[in-house]
Image (cartoon, rainbow, N blue to C red; front, side, top):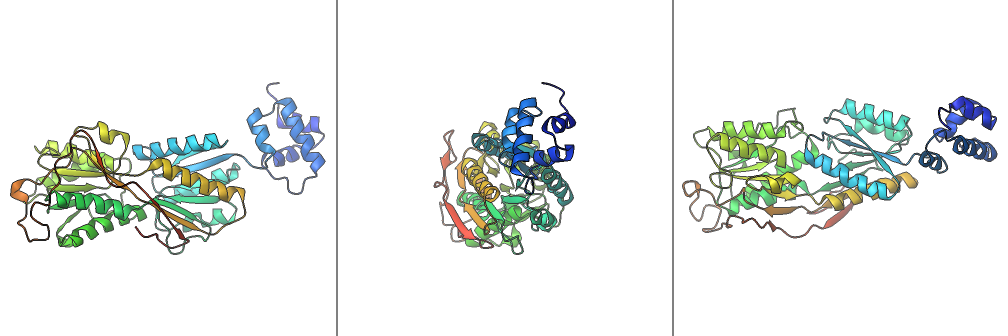
Length: 390
């Protein structure tokens, strides 16, 4: 039966339209069991909604979760959406995707709309330092998991935080360049005001210090004072950075990029400047998106194990949807360095004599077409507000 209205359902069930609306939106706490059963039966008989939606009504909730990402212009977020959706579908859930551009006001608006539509769980991926803008929604029953963001002081007590160890990943990338003999290094990121980017910058500086290199002498482009994240234009940001930095009298020979799209842009900017990635300069990305292996030269990068991360994220969110409020949980997952062809030993003119922080001959041969991967990932778990050891 097509074209059925809520009023026709109400008339057939012998109730008001508002009662039918309450059933559709899960507001059945004060409704008599016989009335609820009659309305649900009428909805199915008249096919007012697809059978799947009608079955959902029996559970008292809509089996849909929200996924709020910075921007699917970065393929990493599209890959996460695909992984999370596959897991959710296997469990009978659907995923609504929202792009926030890391704007707190936009995140709040999406959260309000999702909650109003009966969606009770959201995965939030902006990694902003404060979640105060979302707190009112949590107090109204919205369940939330923060992805790619470690637990922060002041976080809601029930929040689950799941992230790769961003500091460790940046350390792996930077140490790889140092072992190849690079001493003039640049960290290219756009804004570093998000939690994940701050951690990557911290890892970059930690690796320099461990090698006896003064972090103050390294380049952070365009610097920590910028407010633009560049999620939509990360490749262009990287390209501009390479053009500018390689035009300087004493240019860097090694680049650590905030993500793979930025790294691809750096490789292109190096070509614009007459340099070759994997020959004259070395570039390391972060994420290991599909394009990383397909790009020329294939990109050395830090791999985030998305299948494991997506599975943990869904399980943590579902546990909060299905049960009473639980204590916060913070999980760190180890990254892996994947060595491909965009990194190579530093040019001879840029190498540093032995005894200056890097042992003589401490280089790694340029990667062949077969990738080299660092140790397998592991999972670390902490309580709310505590960071797992790397």
